Structures are given as C-alpha cells and as structure tokens.
Length: 170
Image (cartoon, rainbow, N blue to C red; front, side):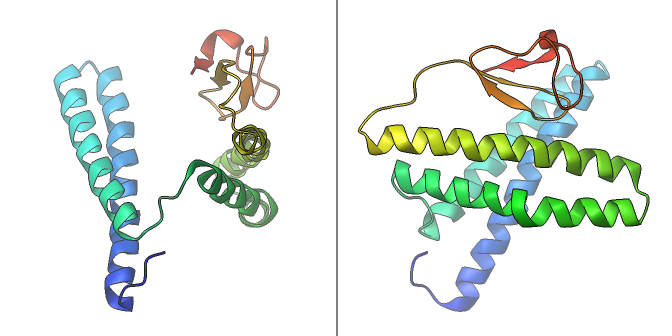
C-alpha cells in the first residue's frame, strides 16, 4: 500500500469496498431486470455498474494495491486461501448452528469453488514466474455454485449437480 495519511487511506479503502459492492449489486440487478423483460433498465444498471468499477479501480490504484502480475497472483492466492482456511469454514459453521439453510448452501458452494481458485492461481503464478502466460485452455464456471475448471466442463457439476450446458465458458 502507498504511504498516505491514515484517514485518507481508510477513506479510500472504504470507498473501494463500497464501489465494489455497488458494481456487483448493479450487475445482479441488471440480470434480474433482463429476466423481467426490462432490457433498457438492465442496460442502465450495467452502464452504472461499469462506472462503479471505474471508481473502484481508481481507488485501488491510488492506494498502491495494483502490482505486477506475479505479485497480483500471490495476492489472489492469499485471499483464496484465507477464504478456504478461515472465512468460509467459520461462516458455514455459524450458518449450521443457526439452521440457516440458504447460507449453508452458499457458503458450501463458495468454499468448494475457492479451493479450486487458489489452485488455478497457483498454477498461473508458476507459469508467469517461468516467463510464460497461461496455457490458453478455456475456463468453465458453474453459474449455480461457482465451481471452476480448465479444459472442459464436467457432464455434471460435482458440487451442485448443474449440467455442463449451464457452465459459462471463458
């Protein structure tokens, strides 16, 4: 992080979080508007979601958090490992304790996907450190649970059971 005064740093961190959440919230709203047959409202949500992404990116850069690719991959690995080893296990246990079924399902889905994300980032980091780019294989993501796989989508998602035809290709 850049060396800046604490109040400014705290403000930018909070602004980054708020803009990031607005970005995602508006994309979610856009998808819902699209399903409801409101393509113009969906377009407006997507446009403003992009503007929120611009704001978040500017704050992120001002904080000095954007690094070179290998360091960015390590930051991603560290974040995924935190989610796998600490955050989601704790959240899942609280959801179980409080018998919150939807929260149990979503924390389980996220935990399983984050394990794969950490591995995929680790593989990419090794290639980058060897002076190479990713291998170019397509990446498939289950739109129900976030299960992520390179190469080909499985016939059925091993986490939630969604069929291969639902997977999004990147």
